[in-house]
Amino acid sequence: MAKIPTHELVYRQIRDMILCGELEPGQAVTIQGLVSHLEAGMTPVREAIRRLTAESALVFQGNRRVSVPVLTLDEVNELAFARLAIEPKLAYWAASKLTVPQIGQLEQIDQDLNKAIARGDVRDYLYFNYQFHAQLYAVSGANILVSIADSLWLRMGPSLRVICGRYGTTNLPDMHAGAISAMKRGDAQAVMDAIKADLEQGIDQVRASLLEATNGL
Image (cartoon, rainbow, N blue to C red; front, top):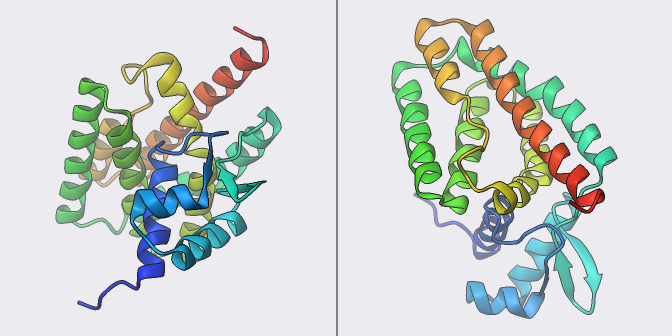
């Protein structure tokens, strides 16, 4: 197996920090701080930040500081429109291609996710929730749309971290069990419907959290 280049490894590490809520929306961090945290060189960290900024997953705050963007309600609505147009369709296409071992892998991820919810582990919840969707969509073979969906997830996923802070993990969206059951039946439409409902539930929670913050509740 080929060794992953350092710059790619650092990119993935910072990307996971965003996806898993280690860098919360609005939290500013310094480039030097990331260098120290990751025990990485300045050059690969800068390159990773450049890539993540181009993907709108990070924004520069000046003074060599970066942060995860804080989404507005209008931005959430735009992302929701795009995600609901793309992700359920990817799930539908994937459903007809899933093998028994792949369904087993998704079921294991969902079990790990449920354990994270039960113990209140926000980071693992966010990680396994992303992995479930990402691995399902990858089976579709629609690489262009998978890449777009991944970018949308990176921009919206961290907002779930805010929800975790407000409500804990017990009320977090997870309608994967219905999707897995449909996968086992070979019912692509039901898989698509379950994934759409899962996304809508999470999006609604992000909207509600933003409205509460706006209203000062």
